[in-house]
Image: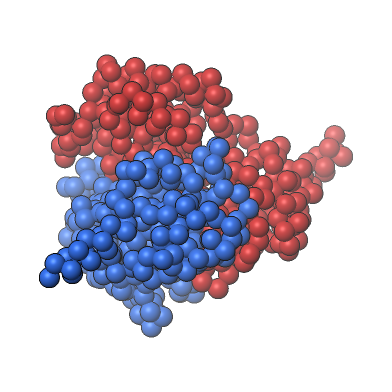
Length: 267
Length: 267
């Protein structure tokens, strides 16, 4: 297998990559939160299959590359995932450097296993380039470590309400949670989390449209708040005592509803 | 507050940053696994305080910058942490752009809270630039998602053995765990994890010296294996059913002991 070397205008330093498929994490959204390695491989790529969730500014790293949008926002259906797998294998047989650009980290809740299985079955060389996962990007935006020596030394990342029982003052960060906010709150309360446990919700992390809100676990349970968030934008939900220190700086989640009621009453 | 603009030779695109302190995640080790934003700010920095854990190739992003090593490998003592906090505040009063470069992600098990508190108390503007945390870099090297739809939809990151009870087929990734391998295994077994649950241990993730090993939870409990790992190198420990598919490709952790015994017998 021979290395492929290119010297592109955008990346003055030449780089060598092996032919194959690169599963690259784009990070949370902002184009400069991809890794240097990821940006360099994008500039070398012959074809890039990118999640519809990716902010388009990210594609400026590409240099005369064939760009193919794939998947759906907030999770692809099985049928389309099967088609993506086939597209990757077909492209690898046609182009030297194929990129599959996925939001966040490619291996965190991104259905990468199915793409990896397809590539392995077709004996195609592939590499994984990690990306900043949304939970950590949201923590950076909030300037709040999800763990601390005194409050929580455990961070749980999940897509499910309540599969982990409360054994310490832990921090939970939920992905793809917009449609199960009330379930998440109820399950944690059932597991003896305090009603006033702080919750921070962040939408479109790291993009100019980023919004963040705070509420208590009890408010989240009662809130019926999923309609506050923009359609098709991912929302990350952070729960734990560590967020109490940020609580005053967050926009209260419940206030928009009051304003809405005031507007309704006035109309 | 005025933006600072520089046009450096290494980063042809000029960038504007606000004066202040930047807590930047260096990622797991390889210099191109830092984010583009992190590399650009390093090139603009007037002074960089870097963890001793950082691979020195990372500092090539700096451009005529004053470089100050701080802390100790594998966790700083309180006294030195207090001194780092003071150095950051003092530097921010003297230099426009100060960087605190931390291994992995700055907010994951990195004692960032103490530095954040010191900067807030001194009313110094600061930003956090996320980094690739070691657990995700190790997953990328292994080409194995830590979660999968059928086996585990929850990933727990921790520094402690056994604070989270087993509620599903979950994946656990332990940081700074080299000295408590047996405890971790015993605690998970006590929580009804199967004796043959696969474990993957990875040292010096993403660096040329990277090594990875596989064993079962039962072998980890009995192994007395911490001396297999190099002094001062971080080891990440990944436990869960998702790793069974990689098991055959990993170097068995117990084999070195057998070889060692053979060598002893021969001497």
